Picture (cartoon, rainbow, N blue to C red):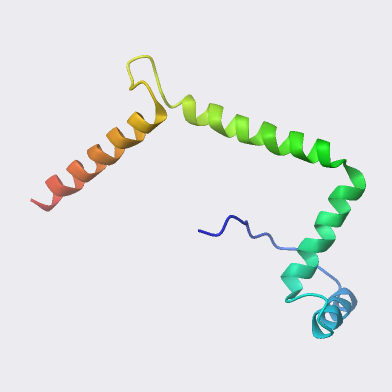
Length: 99
C-alpha cells in the first residue's frame, strides 16, 4: 500500500509549464514529484525539523489513542487480540451467510 495521500492542487497554466520544463530537463521524474518537493521545502522554511517531528509524533499518538478507544473494559487485553477477534467474527459471519 502506498503510504502517500492524494490531494488536488490548482495551479496556473504558467506554473505548470515551468514545472514541466523542470521535469523535461531531468530535475524531477514527474510533476507530482516537483510539487511534493516544493511543499517539503515550504514546510521546512516555516518550521524547524524538530517542530515537524513533534507534529508527526503527536499525530501518530492521537491515532493510537483513537484505536485504543475502540477497546472497552470487557474487551481483550490488547489491540492485537481485538483485531484477531474482529477478523475471526467477520470470517465466521461470512461463512454463515454462504450456508
